[in-house]
Image 1 (cartoon, rainbow, N blue to C red):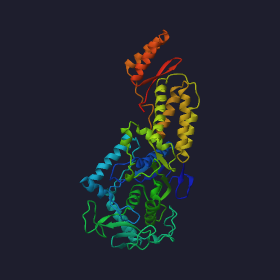
Image 2: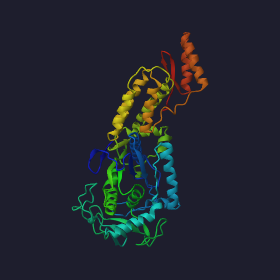
Image 3: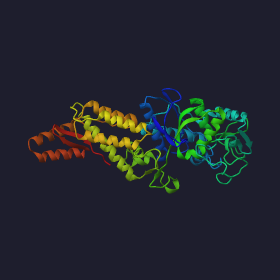
Length: 466
């Protein structure tokens, strides 16, 4: 399988560390609020990545962290603690906020979107002891120093700091990205922050350096190493993670282990809304509930996201979502028609070719738009011909395995009464009573059932409300 490696800036063949197995680390959600469509776009891509690796025959050992600690996530290790801010606004504790939004995120990810559940979903708060030990080892190796507000990693100790983002370290000065708050270098970052003596935090722990909490980047390095080992095959995240979060993960991990942290770095581009950045101030922060409240399917949202490549910028509009819903409806209609045709003779060729085309598109850097086009072409053939059960089940299995969209097994039969109406209409047509046949078709239409006439009789499909 080939993936675009952010570190090398090119598409390259994946070479697993352990034969037959891929270690995969995904940067997870910070659970301080309701996830929005921009969050879910990236996780849809990483779900597709896991599915494709599995279709390649790999065993995927995947870790996706849950950030339930209120870090200070700005470049200068300052700013607001989003967990604490959410707790104050909801009149509860940071611990309760974490539990609430972990539950919501799990429901939306694995029940609504149907994403594959990672094998490991570690919480940052369950690894505080290990994170403290990680900092101790960095200290022993001479990579840290202590100032008034915390313990910092000294980036000047690394010759290749910033290689992922290709940062110009020598040209970076205080004030260009960060303020000089006592740090030795502009790019130095906190591995342990001290709690302010003026406030009592919900989440703080004792450490050899003082009461506080781990730095933003520490949990990912620590949990990846604890669960997957010193080196991993693939690390994923959003492009916004490149200049700071992932750059600092690499720095602290490789300083500690002396080994290359991840062989491949894969980053998803942003999704905008009507061409603008997702922002509460603009009122364009949409959730899955906003989508379903308007009658759209979450599978339509998935198709809309996958209609563009993970590395290119996406644009959410209700018109784009409607187009994806129309495509999904068409695929479902063909599935309903084919479900009734499963014992017929096959008049088309190409099921193995279609599966091969999808496989080739997906294994070549997850080219989802091309794979969707291949599906469209083959389903179009199915709509206009008879086909055997083997061809039908193969293509639907392929769609489900790669995209997590189950078109065939979710087909629900119509009622006996509706089947009786279809038979009465067929009898009326054969007797030349076309007025009665049209009336029966209209009656079925009012019940949401459409008909497609074929030489050997009518086939039904459900009429979408959108």
